[in-house]
Image (cartoon, rainbow over all chains, first blue to last red; front, side, top):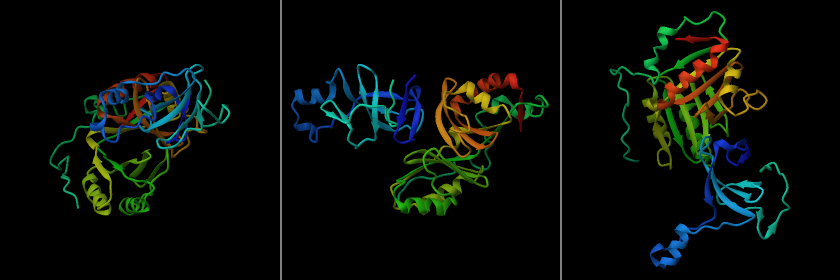
Amino acid sequence: MLHIFCPHCGELRSEEEFHAKGQAHIPRPLDPAACSDAEWGDYLFFRDNPRGIHHELWVHAAGCRQYFNATRHTVTYEILETYKIGEKPRFTAAGGAEPQAVDQGVTA
Amino acid sequence: MNAINVYKQRPDAAQGESPLYHAGLHELAGKGPKHAGVSLREKKLLGHLTLRGDADDAAFASAVEQATGLALPAALAVVSAGDQSLQWLGPDEWLLIVPSGTEFAVEQKLRAALADQHISVVNVSGGQTLLELSGPNVRQVLMKSTSYDVHPSSFPVGKAVGTHFAKSQLVIRHTGEDTWELVVRRSFADYIWLWLQDASAEYGLAIEA
């Protein structure tokens, strides 16, 4: 059982209270009518499937019922951080902070 | 002003039936063991109002305090005064519980105080009920029912969390040293009632009217 840090409740909660909601940071096209079919299809259906760092949308379904983002390593399942919608991740595939067990995201 | 149709959901003339009406709790009252480890009381037919707004907006916070007499609680907190309580449900959502029959007046008072603000007040009294558990073994019953840590060091008095409970979901409120409250949705009330009977059987369960 993982413990996941909810950035709204401000504490670690049991994994069973959460649901994963897929890839995060997917902006809706500002003018959908101007999209080509390929662009719109890409926005609607195509998602990344990286080996390594992945930014995901999660929801604290049984608690405060808020959405937030999590940075997860898809190989180790380590959740490196969680952060509110609109905030920038500290960990990215390109680098950033050294991965370590921090209070705001706990190792598997 | 908005044109929201606010009306008295449960008229005085109507006989309200709580979600546990069918369980006949009033008939079970006083028939439990003498030294029960767990006492259960349904605080039935109270007024439950869901309030939403911007917590960072000082005008919102002060208007709520002016209308209810309770300051907006921070995350995972419940504050109470007399028979009113205000609980944090989410960063922009609170649950206000008021005495039975006053919810209509309170809702109107809140709407008047919060006029012109981007808010929502919804009377959800018919949708949920409040169960109060008290006694020396309540914490053991909760430990059997939820994965959330209910030890006083992690769950002090005045804290309230939404979490999984049995195979359902509800809100647990710690209101006194040996007193806890469960905010149960109507459709889950029977399941939770059956679960609580089973979970507290070994400690002895007494029903209070």
